[in-house]
Image (cartoon, rainbow, N blue to C red; front, side, top):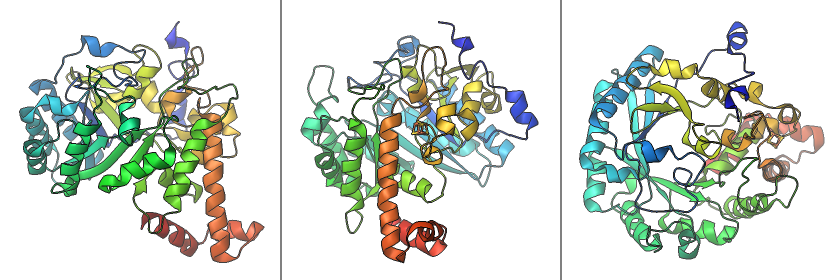
Length: 425
Ligand code: SF4
């Protein structure tokens, strides 16, 4: 397969975009891969179990030289674009395997390098197994927020998230989470939960509430048109992922008062009401995130590992290239141009401005590349339709509006404020 003939490597005219006045958005979020291996062996992991097996040839841990150079590149980018804040996420593999010295080095090097007035928001995405008091003290000392992967109750979580010896990780994760949610609550950023339709959606959501997380992210399993997600028939089978999400949404949305934030649902509500998205999984907002691997190579986003071997690569490194050079890569441009990156079916779709074609990685099909609908298209359409229906019904209840009057009500700041106030509150 000649990938160079696929979109966007072929067919995306970046010069024409510039001629029409388009300019790239600077990166604001930097994913630093500080460790390339993991102490768990989750069977759905896109790093180790997908088409791209590049982890095998990369260093286990990031070196000091890569950290220092990445810090300088972040600072250079922040200065060049006058950024008031950058987000730096320590990632892996399991980032806590990198050890205290590396975590300290990242925190001190990035903060020392950025220009005065540029805030650095540091966080870490962990499987939670290594969260103990000394580790949390270290993260606290350096102001590193913590998000943890948890898939629900013990049965749901241990269905996939196991140690290499097959033992479930739920008891170890729960222990770490209880510490984080107690004395270290100020570091607690939230939970990431991979959706498995074998798990009950309401029971899963309620299990995640046990430590009162400030936010929950439900993540759809990765897949493409060539390798569809588990149980999904892209040619028109049942929309099980939508059914799962709708049950979770109704449980979350119906709670009074709101128990936590659920990022995907809040994004869809916000987009439905005419706002912009802040994640790359939904909506048309430009993606402003760049990945630095343990060897210093720059990557677009590592979920592309599910497409084909080498899909996330840019051919650039922190040693030889500025981050502005990465902004010119076709794969990065494609994730910044919103509507112009959508296929004809998406452009004509009634929920286009909310869906935005779904996550970029889920659009891949060998031959046409990323210029396709999401493999989750039917599920996304059903979920967005359901959420839009709930919002419209609530607005009708608030305003007594019908038909055109309701559309007018959607434009009223006071009505939006009441709905968003309910959501945010
Ligand atoms: S619902 Fe389907 S056709 Fe519509 S924007 Fe999303 S992926 Fe494209």
